[in-house]
Image: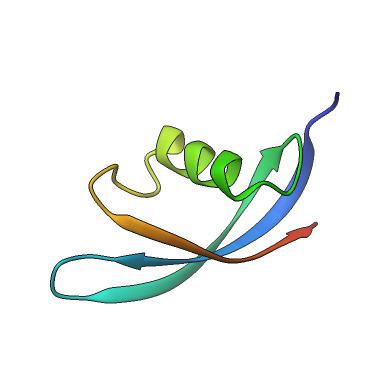
Length: 59
């Protein structure tokens, strides 16, 4: 399996606020859990935040 470039749109929810963001990441498939793992591994999102994947599309 080869990693491909995906555009991930997501929402970060904290105790008092929420924000939407997007990032391009290399993934094996358009899997929500893989996207969250990759974003956390990069440090893009904290492990203590709730993340909701809104959309994943191949870039």
